[in-house]
Length: 113
Length: 113
Image (cartoon, rainbow over all chains, first blue to last red):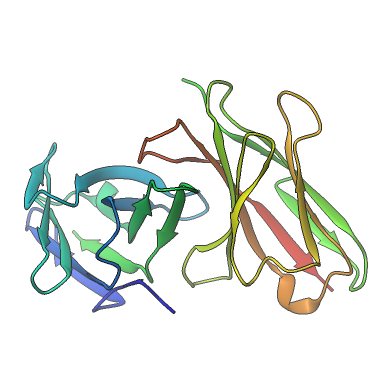
């Protein structure tokens, strides 16, 4: 069955505002949770990951939060820019045995000028 | 910057024909993947490949599909007896061992007519 899924398929925010993209997961055995960005006509691109034993990780303008109690993952993008418009996928990876990377459904983020 | 390259970018084939999608992963990567993305939908895991053999495959990856690493650089996906529902973007990806950052190619758009 599906291990990683998203709450909302689309999200629109004003340029300069912050955005939050959410994801639910069901496989607590995953080693890492990851966010990928897919721009139109391109393959997914790694944004940030978080190890399963962490709660928060920050990158440049992005923060990932992991709530293991409710099996919830979120990606916060600060001060959104037009280039942030894309589909964002959460994903999970388990390193035991086969190294399998599984993607969730995706959220389309649109930045309005 | 090293990148994963895929050829062709677009393949049109008659239903029932066989196609081979080609990928050149990043040279020092050890894990290779094929994913499928039907238009507007999620990125679906097909197969992972490590140490010259399949390490894991999804239920989508049935006898119609096969993968091969014929030499030190290429990684191919063969789809036999194509069906209309095989029409999708096919992405190749590669990672280092124990690394969450998968590098994706630009994809091959397969259209079965």
